[in-house]
Image 1: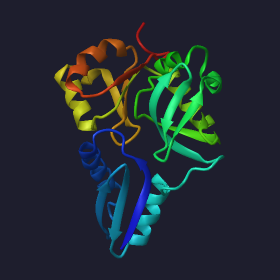
Image 2 (image 1 turned 135 degrees about the vertical axis):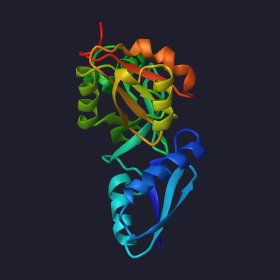
Image 3 (image 1 turned 90 degrees about the vertical axis):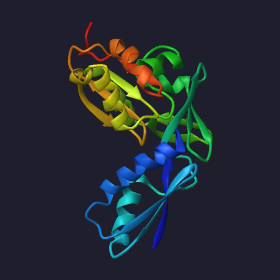
Image 4 (image 1 turned 60 degrees about the horizontal axis):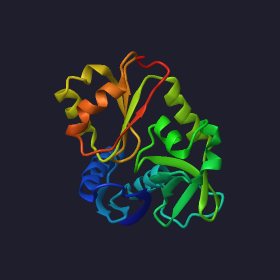
Length: 226
């Protein structure tokens, strides 16, 4: 038996996180001869046991990382906590760090709130950063490239605190399922709705919003409706 403390912050409703991650875990461990149990506090812990427990532990560690004290120079996932004129505050679980406005220049002009709005950055969105000082970070090149890739494509709607099933239901109830190409998973309860070419995301948001207990962020892509 092995218990793994994963580098996966619980951001959102704990009971909803637990149910959603249980489904993810079932897929992760599919085909392996292991039993597993899940423990959710501020972080996620998984206990695995069985003939393939070492293989399962290695797979989960590689995908999610082990909980550890973050040091200067570490590249980690952090979860968006707040945005103000000073910059973007991220939660590493062990502490909060700031990506100051001066380090947002690779994402274009504007204040930190304007940059966050441009790329649909909402609370709990997982973002890859490198710690450059004790309490200061910057987005990695990989993360910056991902955000600009969003801007070059079709419109997107970023969603937090919702399962994929809840998003599908909201789209179906409002008749917008036909306007969506895919729903990309960004975190446990964080997703990005990829609109089809020519679809106007700002027009969809007020329609699906009442059916989701979520914050919605809009990304206006180069291939979106104008």
